[in-house]
Length: 373
Image (cartoon, rainbow, N blue to C red; front, side, top):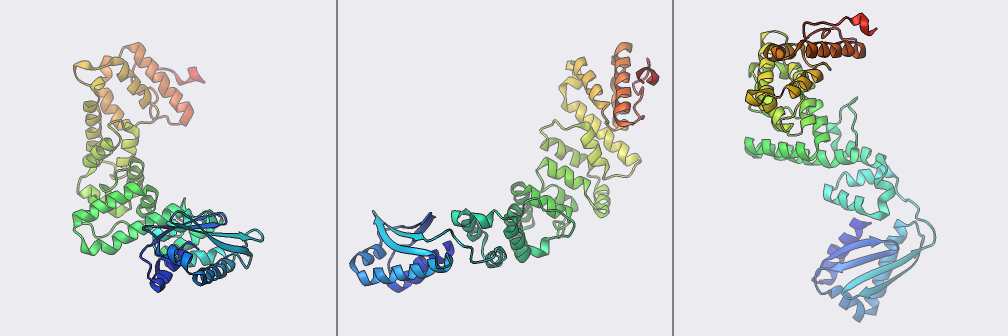
């Protein structure tokens, strides 16, 4: 109804009567208000031409009765200052004329701004709050982006996000490559869940000068890590060839505010590499970067308590190669009693997870596992 009244008063009737203004139209319970952007020629015509007023009321009554299934009881016009107010009453509660699927079809031909207007109307709240409206709308308009077995969490957000991505795709051939990357980065920031869906289904993956650019358009930490973990084999190979591990880690580290967990970083990045020297070099880089970034772990301000806590946390599953590198650098600083306490935590880790790899990792004095059984 919103679009119908907007078209009628701002196009059809305006062309017929040649009044100068356009109207912003608001819809409230049993009331429609026309707010002109300048002194209203239509209002003047209604006041001076009773025949026009009667015809206008009849036309509005016809439209409202179609919408409310002939349940409109009375229609009359009133004014407030320069505004025109259409008042009406209905005999009973509103009866839906159109099935939800039909609304989805209609709005699949509309721009997102029109859909947003429709969604904002209180009269259509029962429709726009029904997931079926959005599911059908997405299916009708953007079915080519849907992939079976890949869940969409919110079809309303998906509709607006995929609309923006679709517009980027349309202009992609006409813009500079750097501009494309800027647009995609803005898109992933604005619609991270939609970007995640497209990345997981490998729909943002074409026409890139360097495959690595695909990763660096993402500035959401969770989305970035998710994408790293979901990379196809072809991307793993490409990234290994470009030796991007250190660069990716630096980017992750920056996104995290330089407070990224060593375990998570290792888990994410090592997904890109096979076991072997390449992985070892990557972990060495990570460890070195972490140490240099934390003043409590390096230099004259080294904080023993912070270091102990670091190793204590590490027993919760940090990559063992990275832990070995760290212990080789700092292990000599710990007393036998502290080492024994750390080894107790490795046993606790074993009982919590079943992982035996860290038992007595920190050397002598060791602890006996049976003492904790």
